[in-house]
Image (cartoon, rainbow, N blue to C red; front, side):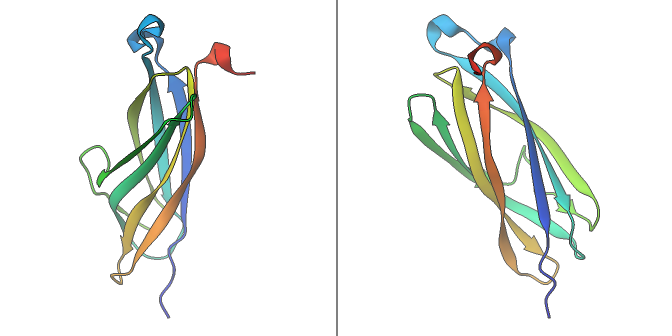
Length: 125
């Protein structure tokens, strides 16, 4: 029986005011992703898929190999963390998606990234 890897994905996001220009509808956000391998086998992150939705409901899809130029191997009981960014035309939006991963048995699976908010602090109610 193949042990199904258990992956926990946590996200923290922050608005970057020094790179944002509200008058030009440019809002820059950073997000830090922590991927924890709670399973019993080593896994590798192969690719990512993002669905980014701005405050006006405009959706953008982004996909590609790895994250921040890496396709990390994550040992059982360990984690991989990285920080990246997104630019929106509105002061609020959301991101969600998944990572395509492969385990040491050669089985591919998706690790879901729960929806998270990108928001300028003054716009959160």
